[in-house]
Image 1 (cartoon, rainbow, N blue to C red):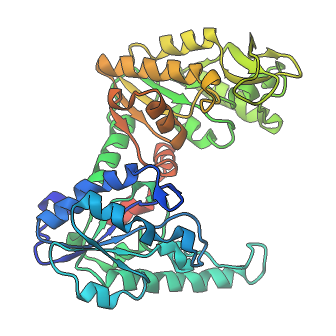
Image 2: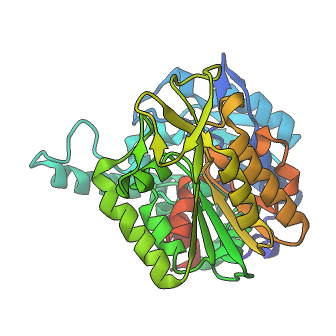
Image 3: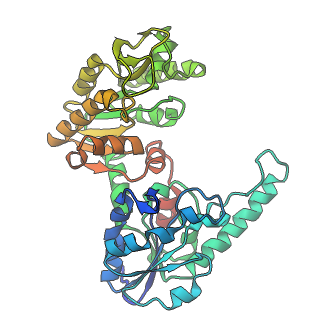
Length: 415
């Protein structure tokens, strides 16, 4: 069922959102995730429905922690939504609050992860323990009961938390089993996210250029291998590139380097060659002897960095090379910065990529930015309105790119 076609009048809708917002002294420091969910939440209210909003916050690991209570964001959600939002102190015992809910009203449930059943992982027992399998089986049964309880509050279910769509949690996937096909749907934000990923991976306009950054090649190998079957050009940047340089006997000083992953790096190069993909990496690096913003800089070849120095950003030649590789692209995927972009003095490589992506977008490319650091880059450089789409999901986006089925999507679509 598509949400725009659903009749919410007189019905209670339970909506999974991602309100895992950053807090400082109990105040929200970035309300992007709340704003992202508003179109879905307002649509349900406008159509005469009643809202039951559920989310997690942080990682309480099945324990009640006051500093992770969603009660802290009730006022902010009320202000954003334009209606007073009621609060249920216990997400698993909210029958009275739900029963009192009228059309046009909204109720926010307490942090789902205060219950270990939400994640469905045994608590207080390690995987190596002989009793782990039995404990896991027992917890999965409890997870179903927890999901069934949440489902009992509503007439329909809306999944609008892309950031957790890669998790098979009670509220993101299991709950969907307790609703018929016509009473469960993706929210507007989820629809946009799924469409954006589909545009990049299944509706490719060429040339297709992907930019993958990050510190470790091992954490991105599945994504890189999947992309090598799709892209025309792959830019690898950030800390992972020093592993590639060292794999060929290069000297990388104190730079991040996975010495046990040389075979992985060489395998990526071989696969790129086999698939006819142009692999682009930095020929030089901006380096420092200390890991801080004010450390003196020097530029060295990426494969000839002295022992006491470490690469913290892509060098000037690399920046030109990256920009040239992005120019003319029609589909662009960017995940991961080119250096320590948090330091103003070591963010020029990431800025060069951002500017090149923005220019290509202005010339007609579809650009998808995903992953917390890449999104932070785009926002830092004031480029958010100059790219096609910014994904709200880090891990979910990466797993989708890797070709994995997202449980939160599959549960709705019946895949």
